[in-house]
Image 1 (cartoon, rainbow, N blue to C red):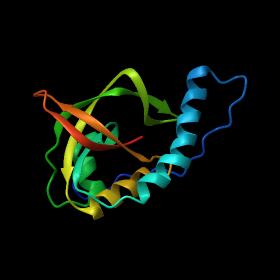
Image 2 (image 1 turned 60 degrees about the vertical axis):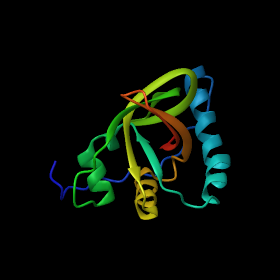
Image 3 (image 1 turned 90 degrees about the vertical axis):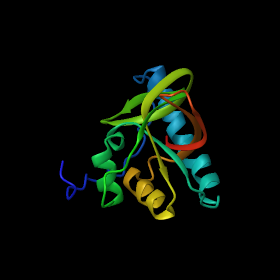
Image 4 (image 1 turned 120 degrees about the vertical axis):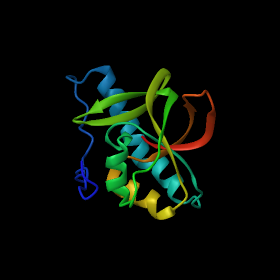
Length: 151
């Protein structure tokens, strides 16, 4: 992927209504996504910006994709990391993080200090996702508190 290529934005999506045909797992995912859209989003938008580490899973784990999303002149340096207490589910063709006490998700961690970068990430992820705070564990077993991830 060249540094000029910008990945497409995620389309605006809606959570499908539950029906008897849905499994318990998809019902749980619907409940998480509906809660995220109504409660967490409102709480987080009122908070003041603070630089921190961001945990990525899915496409933004690729530093060239992240570079294109953020329109950076250089490829960012990300570290391998892991989240405990979350699992990753597929929501249509997109990855979604959901809280899961026994779950673990591998990804990458990148430190950002620019509010513009965070807003660009939020725009890329669309309003379907909201950010949540988490603790990421790096490969060297360092724990990073106050990380953010789009759930």
